[in-house]
Length: 468
Image: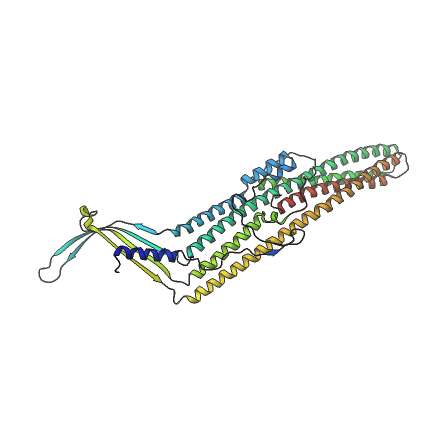
């Protein structure tokens, strides 16, 4: 049965549609599997792909500390930090590159307009010349069939890269918020130490004044007075050093908040609160919520898709070319039906001499995928280490604080007894000096442990991705 032109066109279109629907070449993405320790999971962790609805919602975890100044500093940094601005710009870039990749699904259509006037001279008998005009409006159509899935793999790679950029932005926001919180608690520890030294200076100056009167009365030697003067000057030097440290921390917070360090100020606050309660048993699912791990997984997916792109380059590219438009020598007849011209054709091109280059390119993309897989595994290992350090460190610091508080209570009692015994003439002023130094060291040690516990609680929050 002879086929009609319409039937032939339908068969051709059907053939192209079948070819375009072929599965893309190259391996499909699989996240590298890893075995987690028993404390996190009894078996291996297998990647669970999250939809936008199931992804963890960022929480304002810093509000758990119930400190208005900290809340303001963190929220300001999330809005104005320049590293976050740069990461957000990279996300916008990745999103547009993804849109560019999707545009390859559609044919390229170009339209133009040409007008030409030329003069010709005739040679031979009679001679003469002729002026010729030409007006054309060409419309060109070109479409490469995605027979081997090259475009689909390009879109897959670009989409995964866009998702990785989004997760890197999320990871940076978590990191910046954590840096602000930890810097803030370091500042509060400095303020607490400055308050301790202020009280110490007051005690030492009173002692110095008292000893000056006793020396003038001849009841003590100049040695005790010199020791008292040394202790006053030492405490003053320590406080000046803390002033320098405070300036550096305030300036660091200003830069984290996207501001100039010049003239930045933060009110002094000496209280160090207890860290918030954070679960000590972390299921493996929480590790999947870490944005840096999700970004690493998306980088693996992008690298895998690039292998498919490199594989598709070995196969013939099938292109449909069509051209239409109007062509006439008279402008007034430009859009008449008689001026309509068109052409339709197709081609299949197979690379011949570039096989060595294509093989090298594919091997390079396979190596890139292996590197991304190793980086993903390393990100998981690092996350487990960070969680383990924070969990074990939290338990250890709790015990240290109990011991340090006991030492502080004993040091305060020793100092009070030494002052009473000195006033009774039972001990020398050197005993008072030693007891007072021990008390000061114990108070500063207690402040340091409280600040360290607060900083470690922030590290734990960061380690579990800001979610629990």
